[in-house]
Length: 487
Image 1: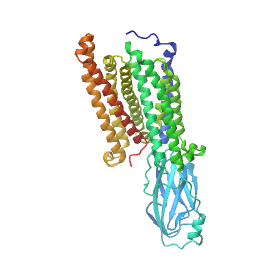
Image 2 (image 1 turned 180 degrees about the vertical axis):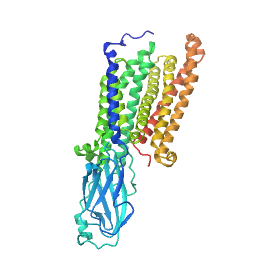
Image 3 (image 1 turned 90 degrees about the horizontal axis):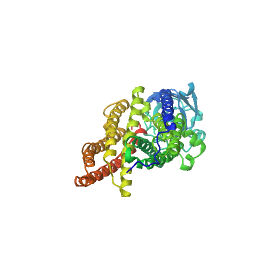
Image 4 (image 1 turned 30 degrees about the vertical axis):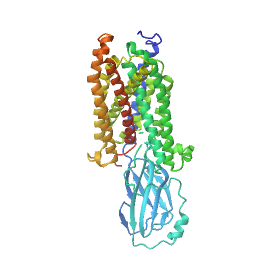
């Protein structure tokens, strides 16, 4: 079988692709480094009155102080006293570091809870609750139940967070989209589904480009145009996932219906802070993947730039951007994403190529293709493991977080599935592929007697199984990225 003449050779545009790609990658890296300090550890530093305190004087204002500037979301501060909701006016000071809630009347004797809802600079929704008591004061004439009730503003649809919330941040977003304020299950599912779809499309699209460049050589290049066409589909899928994630996030933060989440005001709130950059980079990358994938890996340099942009957006919006040390987390996150793309996307592409050959009645002829990819996949597996350990070490506070929190349990499940995939890959790389190579070295008749076709079928089935398992890994990753350790 000869190499099809329709496969393009290296062109001047292809030779100019590397400098352009490096320039975009450098710009994206600088943007990440510049934005990173603004994202780390936004939290409630202090409150006045303090949580659990008892005061003997009426409380005329409640001050919440944050570690970094925040943006009020919804009612922002909801105060509940012995007679129900208390009307408050919420203002900000100190360049967004302080949020002040002034009651319509001083708070007299009773137990009070304060629930707050804000967005960090990177757009992550945060909320919490604290309580205090007032004793031994004379009731204010204007603080009767009827006056308080009449002065209290009508709650908005976003209302207040769950009373069970703690002072630590609610689940964050990196997909960032799943930690909603209103607790709407459908919106949360929509946001996390969008995150998983977007991540899957990015991994498969990037991995397909790498697979086409690494594994499809010689006679195998006949499948390259269809693999590159798959990259275009991944670009479209990435755009769809981003749309779902934005709508879900908007509905979560707005706290209303799906229609309410689609209003311009709700969408504007959903892109607070660097979220606009995160979604913008990923959307731009998706468009370049959709429009720039053309016939071959060498001719798809625009799609390569698109992958770099979308990957930069993914890293910029990740949960790991709240962890320290910054240099280690950023390096590990980039390495983890790149290696996972090569491994996951390569496995999915290998399975797709072998399934297509089977449907078209062509010989699977998987020896050389499987051998080339197996070497790269083994290296990617090592990098994924090392980077994953580094990220986990940086994110968790205590080792017990791995089995005492929902985040840790999901992580352990993900690791278990990855190990299963790694075991399948190791068996095919060290056992099946060598047999295929030996069979390919013999004549066609001898190859059949040696079980070459059976081994190729085994490789196809293993690749399909790995692809399905990787889908579960991506879903788990979307949950982890959108969550805090302290769930």
